[in-house]
Image (cartoon, rainbow, N blue to C red):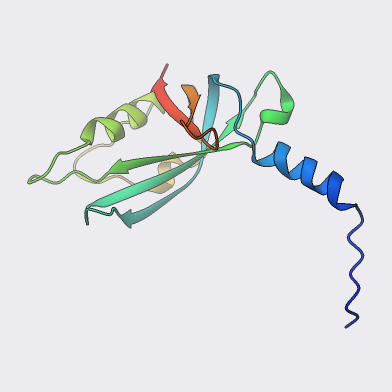
Length: 131
């Protein structure tokens, strides 16, 4: 393989495009669509779900596809800390869970309107509330 790689664009153009792609969307109300949900464990060793959502149907088309992550604790009978986050999200998606189990596959593709803000460091979008 040659040590020379044709990049197709110069660095300055690539850097500008990268900045646009990774910049958070302006604070506003957006429709967010669930694109993935991963189970994991929090730093405090609690079960949690990481919901990955993306902006869809934005007035400014370049904002479509921007990602927003949302973390919810998995409640237990012993620890209901943060249960409001998963209740608010599933209700906003129009699908509160039934019984004591939640099937993550049933939430993929669902949408909710959310008031989206920007993190204090200016790097990420955060969900402030559901509309």
